[in-house]
Image (cartoon, rainbow, N blue to C red; front, side, top):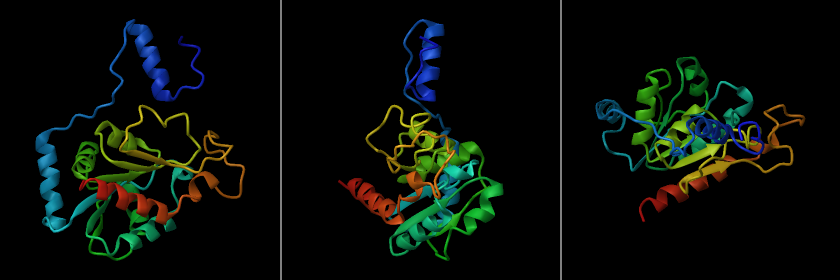
Amino acid sequence: KIFDLRGKTEFGKQSLVLESILNRKIDRKTKYYLNNDIISEVSSKLRTFHNGCYEKIIVINPLSDIEEKNWPGKYYYELNNLFGNDNYLVVYQGSIKQKNKINKLIPKSKNIINVAGEYSLTQSASLISIADLFIGNDSGFTHIAKALNKSTIAIIGGGSYGSFFPYLENRNEHLLFNDVDCKGCEWRCIHEKRFCIEEITPQQVYDLTKKILAQQHE
């Protein structure tokens, strides 16, 4: 069983290995446990930006440590412009090293803020837990959003499709990638551009955002 792992994601492989070692089934549902005090602390800090005047809160983690996995920066800029007329607070987060790069993705807008580098991992997870929607890529924060059962749009492309996503798919998760024949290349792209991720448009992400948030009213 351990050596015959073809066709399984890393999550599936590790779950099977663990079950083989323990000789029993395990609960495969992912979880991320948060302290209520930390959630309250982050909520209080966030209120200094919005004071309850926004209809919805969207948290975006736009970058990963592997550049090839990232949706083009100009697409985030276009997406932010689309958010301009909506009553949403859009919060970008990431590491301190990513702060300046994220600043370049954000047009001047009172409803879009960048808190990259300001929170610990647990505080960042708490911020995701507070949000009405999480938007990310194929990175650790998208896995955290999944463990928190958060409504999610993940612009994952096809490079690692089948390796890390999808697993235990939930109805409130939307994994976006252009289904090309070469998916699963581990981002060793042979084309002039990454068709699997660069053909996901800002308008697609915006329209899906509107649809998800509208459904939350139902």
